[in-house]
Image (cartoon, rainbow, N blue to C red):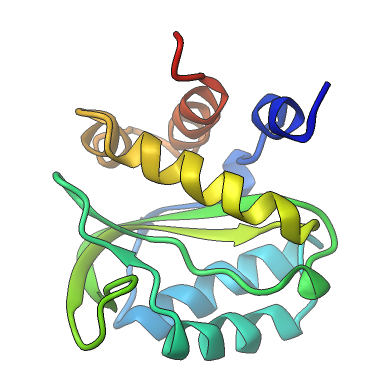
Length: 165
């Protein structure tokens, strides 16, 4: 089984790593809250939080997706103890810098804080997430979920689907 197959067979999200509903004052607050959740569950080192905040200033992670804005903050593998994704579904959107676009902002309602232990897995995961987020209905299904468990189940379902299905 190659890296790609292993990546998609993993359960990336558990209900204990979902903040739903989440309230944040701004992008920094959202990243900090999800980082603290990852630290609490021994997924990342405490230094992940500042690393992700600093990285966000240089490489913004807001995606202007069709339905609902998403951000995917992360830090380098050296800050990660085990792989997982912490998800925050915001009550009210907060503004993140737009990925790959200097100066543009995106109103974000779903924040996915990535903890990837192997740097070579980051790009495939980011590509998979972007693919999932561009699928019609996915983001509204997530924001309309009724519980952290439902959010986790939806993410794991979508991340384990392949394009052929």
